[in-house]
Length: 293
Image (cartoon, rainbow, N blue to C red; front, top):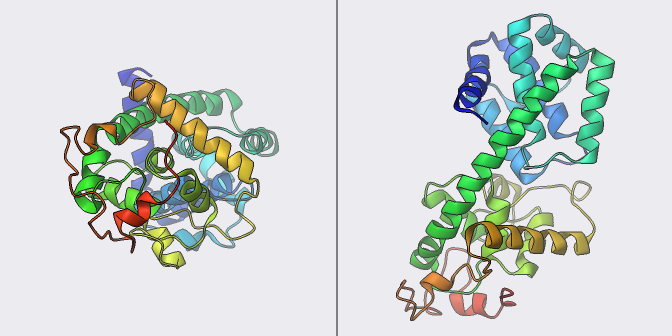
C-alpha cells in the first residue's frame, strides 16, 4: 500500500466521526452485520466493533432493531458517505486478518441485493487487506522483542503464561491488541490457547470467571453457540500462528522466551518464585505442557 493510499484510507475512516448521529448509527448497524456474518463474532472483531462505536460516540447496543436496508440506503445515496461506508465495511471484513468463505458470500450478497458498487467496494477491500497485513507485521515484530521482558518483570520467568497474563502484558507495554491471538499462541501452552479460544470466562489478569472480565481484554467472550467446536482445528490454528511468527520474526525458532531465559543475560533469575496476577505461581505455570521447540 502506498503512502497516499494509507492517508486516503485514514481520512475516509475518520470522516464518519463528524456525521449526524443517525448516520453514525446507520454505519454502526451495517458494521455489526459484517462482524456477525459467519454466526459468531471473534475476539478481534468484538474489540474492533466496540472501539469503533466508542470513537463514533455511539452506544454499541443502539443498533438493535435498526433496519439494515434503510441503513444502507441512507449511506449509499451520497457519494462521499458511500466511500466512507465501503472503507469501513472492508476494514470490518479483515478484522481478524483474513476473509473467510462466509464473509466472501456476504459481500457478494450485499453487492447483489443492495446494488452496491462492486469495483469500489473490492478496491477498498484490497486496501484494507494491505493495511491489515502491515499492522499485523508491525505488531508481531514488537511482540517478539518487547513482550518477553514485560512478562518476566510482571510474572517471573516461565516457559508459558496464561492468556490473561499475555493480554495484560500487551496492554501494559502499550502494544497493539489487534494481533493478540498470535501473542497467546506464542507465549501460552497449546492447552491454554485452546481453552482461551473457546472460553467465555477468561478475564484480563488471569482465569477469573465472568463476561465483564473477558470483555475487558483477557479472552474472547463467546456464547456456547458462537464458539468453534473442533479442537483439532483450534490446535492446528495454534501451530500455524506460532510457525508464522517464528519464520517471519524469530529466525525460525519457536522458543519465544529464549532471549530472557535464566542464564541468557536477559534477566528472569527469580523464575518459579513470583506470584502472578492470574492467581498461579510461575511454578504452577511451569508444570503446564512446554512449548514445542
